[in-house]
Amino acid sequence: MPKRLSARLEAVASLVPKGCYLADIGSDHAFLPIALVERGVISYAQAIDNKMGPFLRMEGHVKEAGLSSHIKTLCSDGLTDIGDEVNALSICGIGGLLTVKLLQRDQAKLTNIDTIIVDPHRDLVAVRKRVSEMGYHIVAEKMVYENKIFYCIIRFDKGAPAKPYDALDLYFGPIARKEKSPVYLEWVADSKKKVSGQLNKNLPPERKDYYLKLYRALSKQLKESEGK
Ligand SMILES: C[S@@+](CC[C@H](N)C(=O)[O-])C[C@H]1O[C@@H](n2cnc3c(N)ncnc32)[C@H](O)[C@@H]1O
Image (cartoon, rainbow, N blue to C red):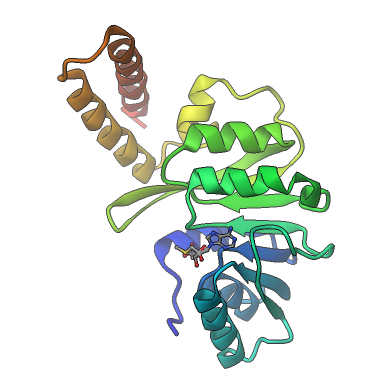
C-alpha cells in the first residue's frame, strides 16, 4: 500500500478540516482517510464504495494500517449510509456530474455536513452552481495537474455565498481566479488553446459567439496575471 498520496489527493487532504468526522465517498482504496488518521488530522472516518472489489480493497488496507477502530468501511451507494456523526464529505475521482447527482439525491443527509470537498476536472460550472444552490459557499480552490489532467479541488463550507456567484466565478472559480496560481494559469492557457482550435472550425453562429466570449475571458485572465 503506497505511503504517499498522489498530488491530487494530497491537495484534497490539505483542505480537510482538522478534527472533522469524514465520509470519503467513492473511497476505492481508502488511502485518503488512512493518511488523514495516520497524520492526526482526523480521528475517525467512514470509507464508502458501492462496489465489492474496492470495498474489499479498502477493508484490507484499513486492517493492514491497524485502523479498523478508526475507519469504518462500507459497501454502499453515495451518501445513503453516512452516519449522523459525519460532518464532512470528500467525493473525489468520480466526476463532477455524478458528484452533484449523489449530493442532490440525498440532500436530506446534508443536515450535519459542514464541509464538502470535491475534485472535478470538468463540469466545474455545474458543480459550483449546484453545490452552492444546496446552501454552501466556496472557501478554497486548488488546481493540480496530474496524469495530463487539470483538477480543481474545491472546498465548500455550509452557508450561502456573500453574493451570488456570477458567470466568471462559476467558470473560473471565485477564489482560483483571484489567486491565479501557476497551475491555474497553465489551465487557462491550455483552455485558450483549445478554444482557439474550436474557433478555427466552421461553427453555427451561436457556438462561435460562445467560444469568442470564452476566448476573450480567458485572454483577460492571462492579461491580468501579467506583472503578478
Ligand atoms: C476512481 S475511484 C476514486 C478513488 C479515490 N476517491 C480517489 O479520488 O483517488 C472512484 C470510486 O468511486 C466508486 N463509486 C462510483 N460510484 C459510486 C457511488 N455511487 N457510491 C459510492 N462509490 C462509488 C467506484 O467504485 C470507484 O471505486
